[in-house]
Amino acid sequence: MLSPIDHYLQALHARLSDVTSGELASYIPELTKADPAWLGISIVTMDGVAYTVGDADQLFTIQSISKPFVYGMALADRGQENMAEKVGVEPSGDAFNSISLHPRTGAPLNPMINAGAIATTSLVAGRTTEAQWERIESSIATFVGHPVTVDESVYRSESATGHRNRAIAWMLKNFGIVEGEPMDSLENYFRQCAIQVSCRDLAYMAATLANGGVHPLTGRRALPTEHVGQVLSVMATCGMYDFAGSWLYEVGMPAKSGVGGGVIAVVPGRFGIAIFSPRLDAKGNSVRGIEACRHLSRDFGLHMFQQARDPRQALGRVYTGADASSRRKPAGPARQHLIDHAHRIKYLSLHGMLGVDGVEYVIRCMLGMAGDTDCFILDMNQVSGLAESAAQMLHEVRRALAADGKPVVCSRVHRRAAILQPLAKAARNLDRGFLVFEDNDLAVEWCENRLLQGLGATEELAVPLAESPLLRGFSDDLLRLMDTHMSTESYTAGDSILKAGEAGDGRIFFIETGRVSILVPLDDGGHQRISSLGPGMEFGEMTLLGQTQRTASVVADNDVRCRVLRVNDLERLAQQAPQAKILLLENLAKDLAVKLRGATQWIAALA
Ligand code: DON
Image (cartoon, rainbow, N blue to C red; front, side, top):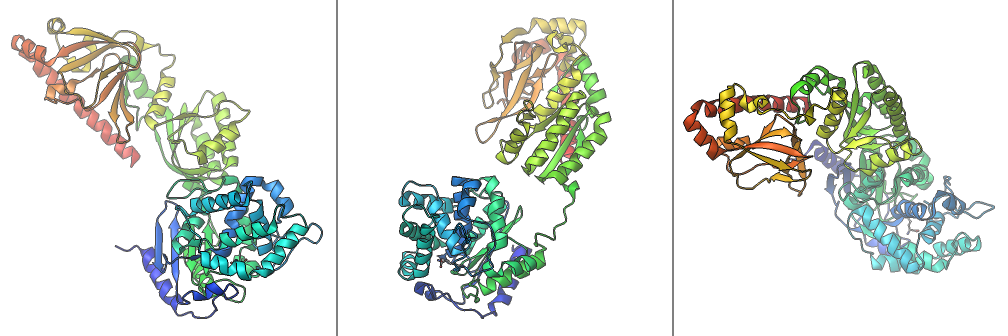
């Protein structure tokens, strides 16, 4: 079924098809071979979905749209300060092929006009022009998400006729802006302009900039985050040449056009947009491309200066350790203590791209809850990125709360650089920073342990068999009799006690001392801990219900001693004392009911 976005794009395509003004670029003879009727529109979301309409897969040459991307490469290779000496960032208000150089230094005013772009191409890393070309080609491919090729006939056509650009390149050499052989760099520039892309490809390139430099589908980084804002700024002020002011005023998106008929526009954190229609206006911008962006900006409210953000969006659900406890099941007094105090653990589920505004709100809420809280867990699962300033604020509040005896930990960061890097940078010179847990279960268990500190290390004491939940209601005689049918097994930390998938051998384990983790295998070969059990708890009991295959693995966390009952021995015992089996099964049914209730609560808390 088509989405409403598809319907919108189809209507826009139909409306723009009637616009027939503008001319094909003819100063590169090969470009006149384009079909003037071609029209493609593509929008890519931050999770990598492409909406397309019309000629979105028709290949054409990227031309000037390559300029901001190559500028990004040069920034990454040379650093912003070195680049500033060679190429400025001032809008020229002149045409794309103008010779707008700084009167004293000869530095081109910006990297979007040809002079700045030729200089930029010459500054990309590489010991030879061939190596520089490889860097340009492979980096553009990372932005697109697949390898790219050059339209050799367009390249040759421009190289044969591009005398004005040749003059510009020599002038740049004269001012010492181009360091090497200017004609070699110029050929690289012509080749980069002749890279073939589709409208869909361009939308992914724009989306990669919108997504902080990471391709939304491949997940590969095409540009370091710190240069994304710089590239988008020159696109916003210079990307549409002598139309840039009106463009920003009306459409309000960083953009870039090319004489091949492409236009890209970037809505940071939201969309990459591309339009392909080869009829150009007098300034060299696609007529329908501009018109399409006008509509999209107005209809979808994309103008960058007309964005209202509600900081409350940064915070999703807030719940407590009482709503969702860890899967570790303590016994004895520890259990009661957690029942009484688990509400003092607070989970905060954070959302989206966290800036100072959102984090200010989150911190305000945390401070409001602090009186009633012993530990905070910041669940980062839904966070797409974190501004450095926001990371700094989080560290500051973490340190202040820690000084008050209230730790703040993070969970589910999933090794994402967009979160870890700003956190690490902000923590520098402070301390070891946030404690980060793989999942909420481990985070809440850590918090529960904090709550239990001071209660005494109850788990180091052996818990007698009589306290096992599965043996509730057993008389002393019955327990003694059962004990004679059991054996003892001991394990050390890391020992595998049971393996998921193995045939069950009918053993039921009653933990006397130590702790075990119950792990289920995941598709990717890893494991998820579903539970952690200590003294007085049992495992393997599903074998009582006739389960023949172990569904989970059990690993010893430390030194573990268990009493073990085999189902065959239970059958022998049941012949002597049938009520032993009846009681065991009754208790098992009650425990399963409790587990089911717990699972339902988790699902409700996460919904
Ligand atoms: O330098 C040139 O003339 C071209 N190869 C690129 C110019 C271009 O795309 C201008 N943009 N609208």
